[in-house]
Image (cartoon, rainbow, N blue to C red; front, side, top):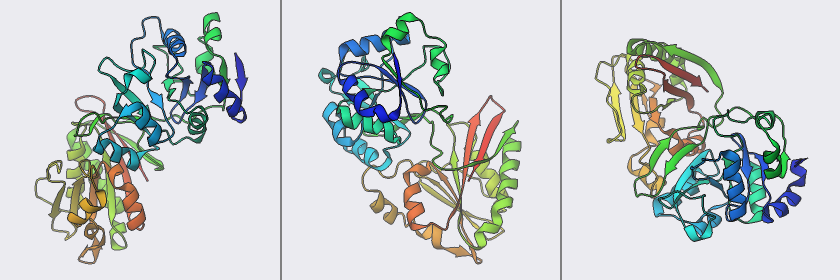
Length: 359
């Protein structure tokens, strides 16, 4: 087992093509990389993880062309890849099973696919020109490894024989796992939301103990930012699993705008509009279903740009957007003046919510 640097990546690529295994940094944590088409390599990785390890092994690629060579992609899946990758997503795709070692794909012939926004791993795949394994380098039931010591302190002699190389770049940033998206059906399905904060910086973290506290927090937070709408639109990019409390937070925003109308989820309508006694329009969007075909055309049909341009009583709109990833790049390019506040809501228990505010 040898410790090497990223400058040795050419040599490492040649070694991986010979069946060697390395601990390598990813955008999320340290992972095990090896040739996902090499049966001996995959067998060693599975044994390293645990004797009874049964999970499929995710794989990493450098571009959509390599993904197409090893998997089956439908039209909506291809559009998703072109729009969101490289990025913090693990895609579930139909594998071409004959191209992989046994133990990589699931019993349903599906496989986890990544193109991380992390140049070193992309370069490694470019040089090997095969899918590489992308499973985390920790043993089963041990913590996520953000530094090499998180891994090596559990090593035994057999582990040292399995791992041929370690690429140590120090302590990695502690990020959430990737978002898992199932692209095997015509309707895109999010299985797990993960590291989707992009370049937003966390400003505050709150804990609320009731629906009323969540509403009041959103009310006070909105009032804090209301001065923005004199000069630009104010966007709340809101994230949270079903039942996390997004609707209650939206009600708090509406309360700050003196809107008495009942706030409903826009999942099926895509866009809901409200206006209250303060004469400020609240626009509530859920953009997840957009962009499976032609995003620009869909946004044009919705008159999307108008919501960022119009004024009521010389004030811009307040806009809530759920799943802003679909339109974030578009907004940054076409409406760079907009103020975006990132709201992440996590359900702790039936009453308690953790709410992260980032800008």
